[in-house]
Structure formats: structure tokens, C-alpha cells
Length: 256
Image (cartoon, rainbow, N blue to C red; front, side, top):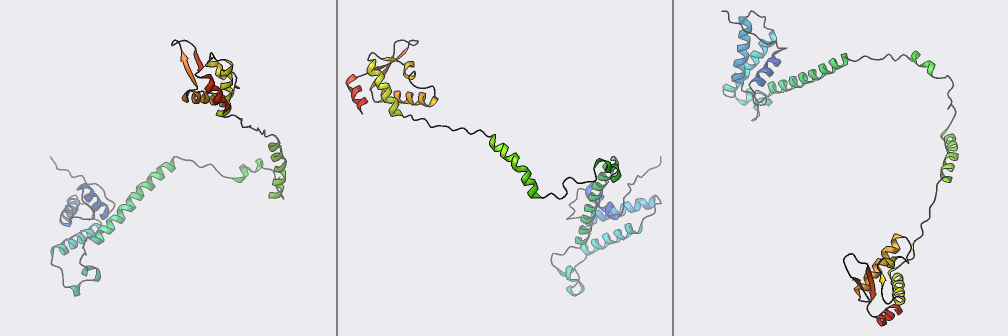
């Protein structure tokens, strides 16, 4: 039984390198050169075993990886033999390779996005924009030719005037009502009915406005608070009566 080797096609050496890094889940900023170089050379060996032509750029990358590997393994040369970048303490021989890989990765991702745009654009059809198709929809003379902003303002003036005349203005008068006024009215009624008045009848003398009803109720509470009147209910369902406690005091309170 023959042993078959299936190799994925790569666009170039950077495509192969990026595949190996992603396959091994390697941090692109900290590439283990020895491991990646071994895998890269193994891929080229498989291509040779299949009698496949190896592009020169793949061989150049192999030489670059071997050079970086050797520089990492060998002692650092004297400073006078190094370039300015290489003489720096934090210099890493992998830096240039990492920079090129990141640039290739960005270009590859952008190519995927553009390919997706291309596929979607293939599903669209543009409508012709020939002026002759629409020229018959418009007349030659321009109805607004020679008109200015002042002309438009003059035309708008009668419309604005009609809108102002159509407005309805409502004047709301403030009700002249106070707790003192309502208190005196309630005291007068109790003077005329010393036997007491029904709770509902307290509000029959006021107008239907909610303000006067509320003020009348507050006046009743105030008289109850100062013990001028009392509230009595014979049974839970019986009517509520308002009774004066002291008629003489009632006179004094009314006089105030």
C-alpha cells in the first residue's frame, strides 16, 4: 500500500509560516525559531519527495530562518561588527520577520474582506444612468428661475398670517378662594344649623371646581383640628355629621 502525502497549497513563504504559527497556536511576537524552522524545512522536504518545484522565495525564507536560528544560538559578535540596531540591548533577530509577518497577515485579512465584497457585488446589477431616459420627465423652463429668498419670504407671509389668525387664545382666570373664606362659610352654616350638617352638605355650597372642593375640605380639617367642630357617625354605614362643639366659641372663631 503506497503512502500518500497531501500538501496544502500556499501563496508564498509567509503564507506557509503564518499557517505553521496558527496551527501550533504560537504567539507571533515570540516565535520559537528552532521549532518553526524544523517544520518549515520538513514541508520543503515533502515537496521535494513529491518532485514538486520549490519556488525560490520558499528557499530564501528557509535561509532566512536558518540565519535567525544561528544568530540566536551563537554568541553575540563584538559591538564594532554590529549595526546600530543589532547593538541595542533589546535587539531580537526575529523582529524583522515578525514585522513582515504582521504586515502579511493584515494584507491577507484585507484580501478576505475585499473578496467578500466582490462576491456580494457580483450579485448586484447597476441600473443605467443615461440622462436621455429621464429628460422627458422635466420641462425646459425652470419655474423658479430669477426667484430669490425675499420672494419666497413674501409668498410665505400670507400663509403665516392665516395661521396666526386661526390660533385660539384661552385666558384662564385664577380662582379667588382661600381656607379662611371657606372656614367662615362653614361656620355660618353651622350657626344656622346647631344640630349639625351632613358631611356631603359641606360641599353643596361650593362651586363644582376641584380647587374649591379641596379648600373646603381643608377648612373642615382645620376646624376639627382646633376642636371647633367634631365629626360623628352613628354606625359604619350611617351618614357622617359635622357638629359644633361650643356655639359661643363658634361665634368667637367666626368673629376672627
